[in-house]
Length: 379
Ligand code: BGC
Image (cartoon, rainbow, N blue to C red; front, side, top):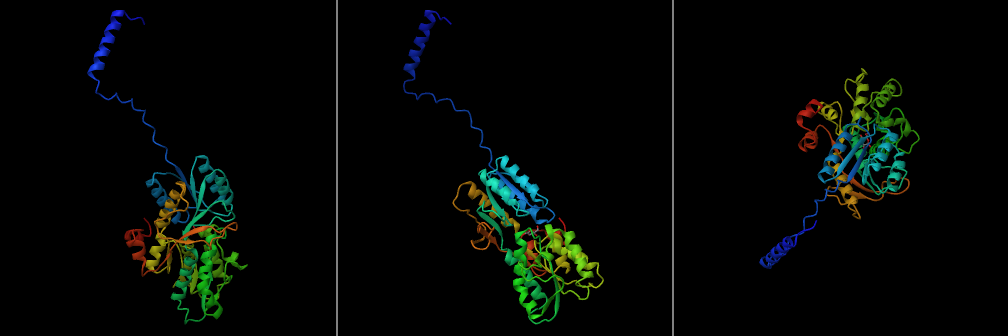
């Protein structure tokens, strides 16, 4: 646009004046850059094996909360004890851009998904159950699984006073043969009980493996940790191999199976008084049954602490730390957990045996359950 000479002169004069008057002032600040959008939260996947065993719902809940408090976005998927379903869930998490995935596996076939995740640059942490058959991950967080079994064996030894007793009858159950933990639980229990089997103080009815490498071990396992399978097997034992004896104890690997075994025993008129029966996980209904004397013990594994330690490990590896830094109390083990491809660095938390005597202290005073929930056996 053409401006008149007069206008231009006025503008020039005004500029000159203003330049004189403002000589000492700092130049006007540059206009602020447009505010940067906040960085999207880093995604972490939680691949949880199942919900038919109560603890896993808590594991997911606690880890999600801890990771969100650290600023992560969390994707949780439950696999319903189906490894192909879990592998798809893991692949989805990788596609969505997860930087780390925590995997509680179902079977060894989890290895395929873990290896593809690694190829995509995603770090995997093995959670509670060792992922076998692969070396595509570096860390495993769990409880001392052998100790879990030892606590179960010790509870049977104490309750039956095996140091002095003779000819007590027991039958044996183990967890899912697809779960590496099941071997550790059984071997830990037999570590305590085997000397009494050898001495004759304890007699096994039904299949009698004394460690998980025995050929008969598969006969006492419970595929998929399924309660109905354990109940059916107990019924078969009661009408078959254990018919002519009165059982003094049943080695049950967890609470879900313990309760289904108790269900089968209760249908048998011979068991007005139930045998000693072990468990694991500190499930709510089992807590009630322990207080009522129906189940003898459980092994409490504080999943709040495992979840917290795992969230800390995830945070460390995402931030590129050379090693996970945990504030929770865990024993580092570099010799025990062999995937078949490598020995994985493991962080082991301490399990606690719980009977009627310390249940309130361990499960209620610790804030895990309310006294009311234990009394009702449900939340
Ligand atoms: C866990 C137990 C659980 C079982 C069945 C095992 O791997 O360690 O806590 O009871 O799986 O879900």
